[in-house]
Image (cartoon, rainbow, N blue to C red; front, side, top):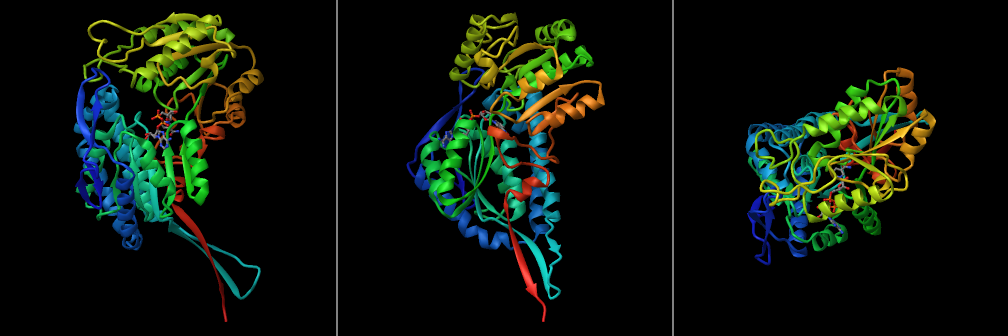
Length: 477
Ligand code: NAD
């Protein structure tokens, strides 16, 4: 069902589409298959709701967000089970994602109240300047499947906190997670039209409406760089405000002074997070020659302990890939790396057998001897393959790390504080983990530089993405 103007509705066409469990290939349920006219209805509902919603106090908006946070937290286990079934991540990780998703509701419930303006001194004695922050208007959001609940709250929470109304189109692979997340907003008591959900099997007609309708003043997108660029190009026709959270190609730098065992533990955890299907997963692991052997030995040992399988099964730590295209990409990147001289330390192939035949399971893989002429060195992997590259000096590795069109996350392992600052400042990435594999939180800005995106989500920057800045110059008599 679509959620438009506070009501659950069928699509105009009456059509639905299936959502599948990637672990088994089974159909999990059906969602309404919206077309352009449905998206137009959702935009009209958001437009009608905007005047009253934008005039509510920040305290009223905050109270609703607190309630949504309370409900999402209370429903954590049910949401997590659905997420594991629809997206594939192990249940423990799915619970963590629901907590992270709820964190954005809590953070923006608080941040709504801190939407301060400014007063600015004038060069004229008779003049005063004040700066107001006001909601942009109707916002639209398009989200990916890999974090099917937190990517929604990361956009909806700041939008409604700012006083915007919003229409959200989730990924076609995970509509059921979006529906359950919207039940939270419904039950929290958001007025009709403030949050609207349009599920569809075909993003294009819905995107045509969201991008073409002049009522939509802001578009926030999380997904691939390719689609993000297309959205930016199309949004420019009406100069809509755009936020883009796109792909990454994170370098993971292990210096000679790092503890190689600790670094390998971090690499194993963050590389195989969500089966490698996270935008902040390391894509190139650069290890100093002097610590390469102990690092690789520990990484191999840790990868051997990972347990691939259906995320709903106890003890499973790596779920399936999302679809056949992802499997094809893993096989292609490994074949290309081997053809160019890389070595498989462990894994490297599709998993088969009873437990695996219903889904797309790729063995957690470590490749050594990776070089710059390999596809995996340039193309986002988005899967469970850890490519290891040996380096000799700091300047060389900084240049190599920056030698990508992406600029989202990066990681540094070193025990030298001078080096940590020097390298962090030299890396062209929006997020840097220093001896830390989780440099993210609802409280801090998340986003990339270069072709990894525009704008930031979370932190106080997240709210500003949904606000216009107005200056008033006041002449005194
Ligand atoms: P995708 O770009 O294929 O799809 C993302 C969303 O865009 C989906 O809702 C999809 O239906 C929609 N879409 C697809 N084609 C479209 C079009 N032509 N016009 C409008 N909408 C369209 O990406 P994906 O495969 O779902 O997600 C994986 C990508 O997302 C990876 O590149 C990953 O790095 C990135 N990602 C980035 C972040 C971040 O915060 N930077 C977070 C998660 C994922």
